[in-house]
Image (cartoon, rainbow, N blue to C red; front, side, top):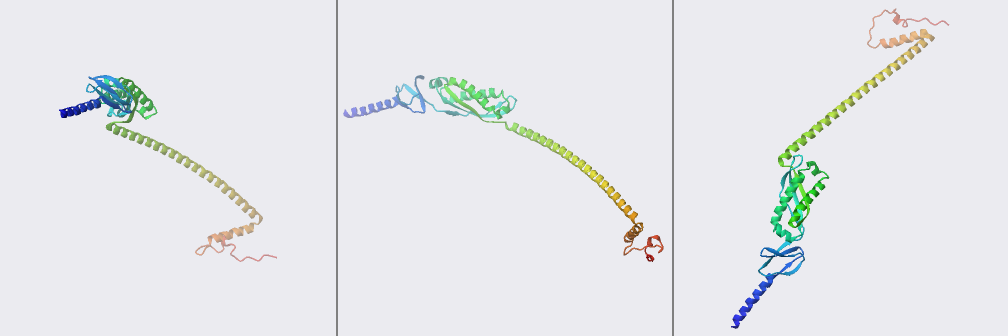
Length: 290
């Protein structure tokens, strides 16, 4: 009898411990909770601590209160200039109303599906009204802020606060990239050819001006040389004339000597009469009278 009472006491104590364990729960600093009874939320808990619930009748759903990340799959979006883009984005959010979150979406997996659809629709709507170049300019920050605000407004009904939405990468599809790269290459080649043509034209102009300047300089130099040569010849003739006028006989003798030196050499053969005028100074001269 005593043994049965002892076993019964142990079983009762175990049941009580089990009920107590089931009735108590802890909410830590990173969590918030909802107490659910028969599928309906009966209590919302946002402060950390030790709490109690009705055992077996109530259960607790915990939600993270920290800043959470969500990365939707990359998708193709068409910009305002009909350029197709593969957009890879991400969002950061936190659950600010557990009760509304539970009533609207129920779980984080469902919420991420709906948030992904919201982000996708907003990206298509916003990027469909901007040009591709705007995403590569300072306007990008304003576009991101516009997307974030629209997503945050729609996601507020889920009981969450969207802190940020960013485009990690926006690339052209592979087939479009090759075509654009080819077009960019041909455009750069066209610009290079244009610059080369302009350079060749300038070089030709420089050469033509240099050749013209060279011709003018040579002509001026030749003109100056002709003038100087004429002046020298005139001065030479004047000097010869003056010298001839002072002593014509000596001048004739001197000119003859110059002619002898020029005409007569080691291998020179001349057939002339000894009495010719050319040899007039080779004859025997008479002694000068005192």
